[in-house]
Each structure stands twice: as C-alpha cells, then as structure tokens.
Length: 266
Image (cartoon, rainbow, N blue to C red; front, top):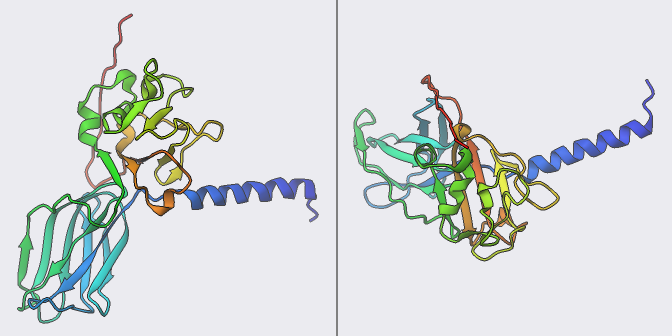
C-alpha cells in the first residue's frame, strides 16, 4: 500500500506534538522516601517497605538499598498506611499519612528487635514541615473546595487565597472572570501575568497564545490543587511566574457522589 507523503508528514507532526505534550507534563503524584534503621541507628538493607492507599487498597512496594534507603516515587495522592518488615525485627506500621499533590514526603523508619509477627504501630500524624523540597507553595484541598463560597462555582477563585497571588490589575478579578480571556492573568509573587504554568493531572493545561489556562474543570471534579509560588523545582523551568497543579478526583472502593443547587438571581 502506498501512502502519500502529504499525509504522512502531518501524521508524524501530530505524533511528535502528542509525545512532547506527554513528556512535558509534570506528574501530580506524590512520593515517599526515607531510611530504615535498627535500634542503634545502623542501616537495614533488604527491608521491605509497602505503602497501601486506604481509598483504593492498592499497594506499592520498595526494598531498601545497602545504605537502608528506600523510595516510592510515583504514588497517587490520598491517605496511606506504610509498613516495613525484615527478618529479626518487629513489623513497623505507620498510619495517619496524607499524601498531597506533588508532595515529596520523608518517612524514616526505626525497626525494633523481635519477631516479624509482632507489630509496632505508630498513629501520630507526620509533621507537615517540608524537608525534601525548597520550593514554596500552598495546597488547596477538597475540604476548602467544597465548603468555601465560589463566585460562579469557579474552583480557581480559591487560587487568590494563596499568599503572594494577586490579579493583574486592581480593576480585574482574575480567576473570577467567566471567560478564559483575562481568566487566569494573575501575578504570583510579582511575576508576569502571562508567565504562569497550569497543569491538569500531569498534562500541560496552558493555552499557547497567552499562556492562560485552557481547561477549567468543574468544582466537583477537582480533588485538590497546589499553587507553587517561588523556588520552583527544576521541572518547572519554563516559567518566570508560578505553577498551578491540579488533580481531579479518582475512584475509590466506596460509592460516593454529590448533589447541589446553584441559583443566582438577577
């Protein structure tokens, strides 16, 4: 079968553009890493570390290296339980772990001598001090999205509650605009209004003309989003402003839904 070059070239260009869009997307998922040690503070190589998502019951496993370190780099956001075990030590269980969008959480695990059948359970929440990243940002979680008032049910109105975010001009309301024109022209920490990046579930969500937001998901579809304002990570090198990274809701093992009434009188 003979294919005309006039048809092949556009097809190749389309495939290349799709590949670039995929590669340039920043993962909205989180990561957990740390070191497993014994009672003397020495590294425990070969230990199994498992992170279980409590919403979906999916488990992610890693094995510590020679220096006792482990890494679980690609984890969907949500609530987790982390367990660690090794022959000659009690099984370690840590609950109360909440992994947020783009968060790199450090969890060091101390093991105690004993039988694997014995369990040491820690229920205390992990301190929210970020030690793995130098960037500054704020996560707007599902509770605030559901309970705070939204002008026109535009979820990105809540971007303006993040410190350092302001509309381009005093006369414009930024994210409260209905149309995408002037919809996302905001300044983040004094950066240019057209210099921000927007991501949706890891894919680029910026319109190419003015670098404005392209797709605006409805409020009920958004799980949470993070506004990164300064000291951005290396993967965000294309911007001189800030980054808005959005994650939509995913399924869990529990049936759930929402119902609302929206009324605006003239």
